[in-house]
Length: 307
Image (cartoon, rainbow, N blue to C red; front, side, top):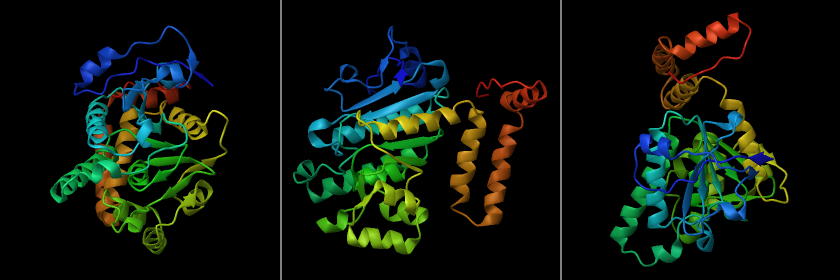
């Protein structure tokens, strides 16, 4: 599949207007994230796709090769900054979180760096890591984790904070913290039981068991388990297909649907329906709702603007 990309943005504090001004299409079309596209000095890359049918898709690429994308202080800071940019960019309709490092999604915490921390440092770092996961979860646009390599410990916790997960069938996933005498500390003990039967989630956490992508799909952790390809990006390609199904739909509607689902899952049914009503009320005065009705009457595809 040939894709056209915008310039990769440096991960620095910036406003959404700055990010929008940085988007420029490349002069050539090339395969997604070839080795020539990757700046090895950047631990994280934020890229906007620019082809007509992919506009609105942003890709966050983990690129800490020597440390298997493990969470260092600097990588977490970069993630927090990039998530802030995405949260305030109304042009972003879907975010894909992936690895640019072959053979790994994320190995969790950087244990070498962790060993140099004081107890107070560890507490502060885990608090920041937990905040980062929450910020991913609360991004207005849907977030898809494309898992083409092992996702262990905090790596799986990050994937669980996404709205959807696509894995390769042979990939390994696991919350392995109890093997180190600790527990999942970045939301894993809360998010996994909300996705699975709590008893199954407890079994996986207590045993620190690693499961395959096929098992993750059968349990309901992953939306899709795909066959690996030669390029090592089969999960990303499937995540891209899924994102392209979302992009044509009304962005306000998609964002309000995500909000209604996420908030509603935390309350009783009656309160959840009230949340749904409040979200629907925000859609009624939008241009997109009127465009949807007009396009239906005219038997054409709607052209949503996100307003």
